[in-house]
Image 1 (cartoon, rainbow, N blue to C red):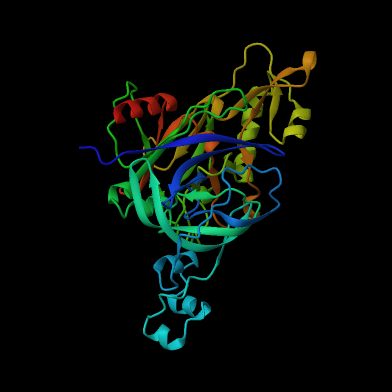
Image 2: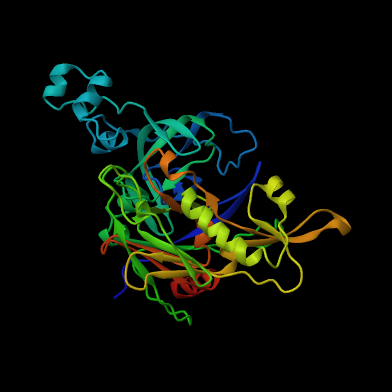
Length: 422
């Protein structure tokens, strides 16, 4: 018997700033009488659900995509300083300390009678932004699901983060963890299948399915998942870390540095599978080796487009003429036959550059240099971004502590699931 299935409609969002950035969002309603609709980025690399609340000030947010107006949360309830959620948001600071900060009297602290003292504001940072928020509780509704006492961060001030985030990481305040209070099955497993990215504004974009729990697959596709074990991260426990042994370019396999195969006791190393990061980032040593082998094969046929590289920040890029052949790229994860061959469009983007008659077809490798291994400031050794995940169903199986990948027609999967639902 299949466990509960809930389908959340993704919307492909584009924000044109200095470079093209693509992220996936989900929508749900908060509160009641009346409820308020909110749209957030879906992010497996963080463990908190938060969004802007009125009044809201966002620093360095000019030109950034903003999915939802700041919400009015006057009917929501503040979280107590005694709540485990408060300690979690403050990186496990004791409730006694938090209640002291909240000015709860000492005798009340000693008798654990600080329910009227609210959780102090907390600071939360991403790689490219941050915010300060208070914890609140209200009713969340999505599809046919209603979750009372849903805990979220309400931010009145943010830096470069005008849109909120639905964290799907492994923390207690993540969306799957909170949904698991309704049914453990919802928190034990989820998957998504990201429709292909497009830089064409006129293209009709179909939704990507996000699936909470197990489901019966009645599609006509033959689906075989490739699994790799999750690695425990003692410092960044909310990350979905996996091990990478190498990357093949064509028939040549380039071994990954040891730091990508494991996570050490300090929480450094491994590869984070992250829906909230656009492009895959590799340590410089591996990135340079992959680029060198790719260029050795493609560069002997097609001329390098250096001016395009300077203009876009991508690379290597090539002017394409005639039949275009590029080598395959395969990721080798820890495990038996845990090999994932990427579709060409997941690592080689082809487009027209220039104007009118001067336009030429160009192709660029879509991997990013994450910096020198010796200069990394700790944390993940690499990040597997959503651009490289497009066209795969990616399953996060927490019950069996593994991540799986299966090539899918994501739009067809969405249609199939909706037919089954109806």
